[in-house]
Length: 292
Image 1 (cartoon, rainbow, N blue to C red):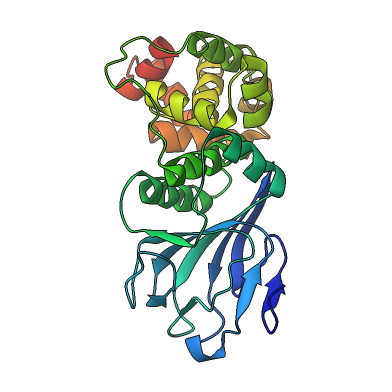
Image 2 (image 1 turned 135 degrees about the horizontal axis):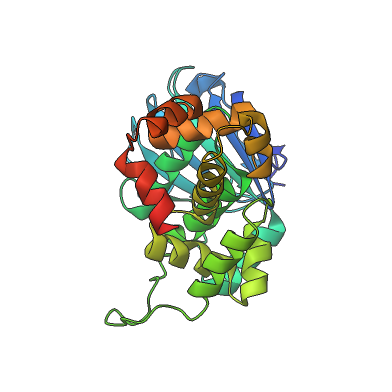
């Protein structure tokens, strides 16, 4: 540790945590600052991390940072970076992602990450981080695998590695079909990104990025669509209680199922049953039935 610098352990930041999620290989927090700039001590983080400034005036010494930024701004800090990055006032909001040493080693098998603190104010990494923050504030719907995939996508975006080495390559990776089948067959399980990537024989960074490239969603979001497809099939039988359908389709409980259903289709499951009885269907429900 640098003399005079406070060392913050994995998953720890100067701020009040509104949301905290422990994922396989990552720790994710949505926080508000507790110190003004002049009160923030010189410090370092024991683990590499991402910080996305969502709101508030923020000052950073990272490469590419403006003197003061009001966000959105994505910062990658390698482990042991000595800094005094801070909000000018004790107001604002930020997303923080700590990267475990194991996940960092896996990522760096794929591509090199910046050796010094680096800022992005636009591009894929910032867009992914903003979507990530939106998932965090959606009550009860952000699955572990969806958030885990976004962490790997952040690492991929920060590395700057192109998803497809040959820009003219038209064919899909040979494992994409197997990935889809895996999610269909095991959609009721909580599969981790590392576990799926290992079964498919690909790197988790490549898996997360390539899957979104093909299906326009994370593996976790696709799995949710598969669960909703199964739930829709069960709802054809009006005698099956919604609570039983929720558990059979892989949801935690009826509340989780109802929240997911409403988010995807804009109506409650019971309302869908009433509309179905009257032969009224939404195009999005038909899409899930036909395309998954």
